[in-house]
Length: 274
Image 1 (cartoon, rainbow, N blue to C red):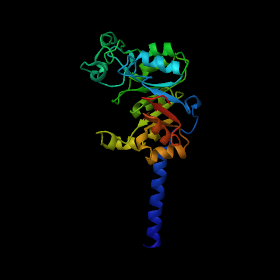
Image 2: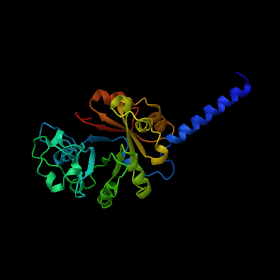
Image 3: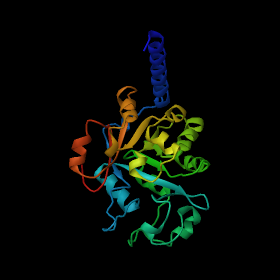
Image 4: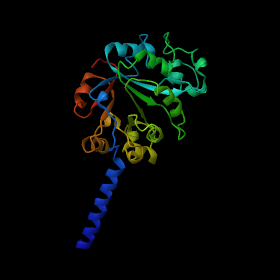
């Protein structure tokens, strides 16, 4: 290979490297304060036990987490009549034993269903906020699979009146874009995993999400990554080079926590007490 070809190849590699880093780059300027979330443990869907009267994303599970002093991770949908409620799955069947999606029902209709055969029912977001009263920080995942994320405005109207520490996260980068445009001061995080291994989503869109290549658009303040795939280069670059806080989900044993403690700054856990 002559010198001219070497130069062309070197320039191409350098340019590709720069473009890769620019694609990965999270928010660097005017970063919001994330100190309240650093080195904290967050109970996944509350301090829950689906078989013991405090099912996931229930008020009972949230009260237990607050009493134990843990932060909480929770999931928010918007009902058919525009009420933000706390529930993880898009479908009701696993937890409530009925057909349909959360958004197919009004809030009052949802109240006829119980969670995991307990006495607990799907709570409103503002019901949780009134109970917590800022005593522990919250990680709020906005559940959305669409490009239309108008539900963000509905959820934000409630969160604007809350004085406690919270941040938002989502797998859907359009949610982060909405917050960047409309509520840039709110701490926002990109949820991600190795979707090729972890699920059935193998389109180019999920390739970009796996490798965090949409950060240049969403400008996240933290990356919440499936800790089983913590070696993903983009995740490590965001933390090491760009000093972007790293959130681990979901840690399910003391052994897992020990193995990843040096790789992450925030830990979402379930099934044990860290």
